[in-house]
Amino acid sequence: MKATALFALVVALIAVSNAADQTAIDWPAVKSRVFPSALDRLRVSKLLVLDPSATRRDAPPGAARFHNWVVAASSVQVDASSGSPLILSMRAIVGAPIEGVAACYDPHHGAVLTDGDSTFDVVICFECARYDVFDAEGKLIWGSSFAIAAGEAPKWNHIFRATGLEVRD
Image (cartoon, rainbow, N blue to C red; front, side, top):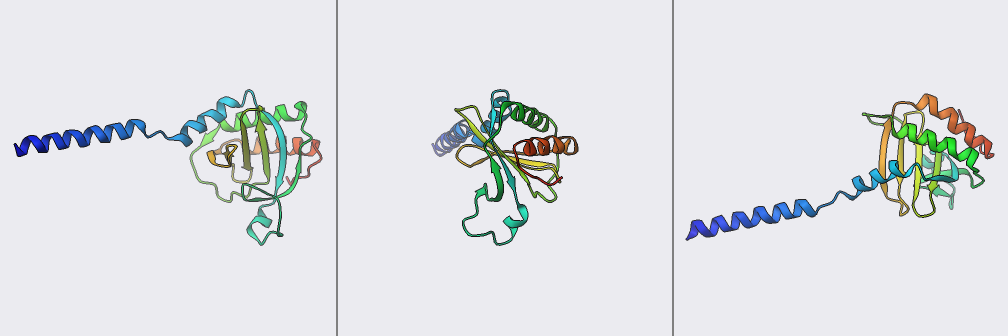
């Protein structure tokens, strides 16, 4: 009788454990797959120049922030001819992941990408080739190092300058 009860308890524990495994969804992983697939329909709605040195020091009170980074300047005057190359660049960056950890992560570039329904915020550092993507609620959903920083940084800088934003090379 005791063996039967013990067996029933073990079977119940295994069933509960398996049920928990099946219902536990890794939502950040699900959302991270949404961003690359959304790139084809997104447009750039805002560009931001970030100041990592101000972020590390005591930033001026009330300084605008973009996911904790101090915003030095921003522009919402992004037309399709400027935004489309940035989307193509972002697609290339997402498509060139590498293993590793960012050495500095001092991002100078930020962008808000949207299709009207979904919004994603991108924070990117071309010095260490690392980026993070946040959802509309400000939650980190994607981040990676990438292999093509040298080729993409001039493209972003050109797009930023076309909208009147100065970024360092």
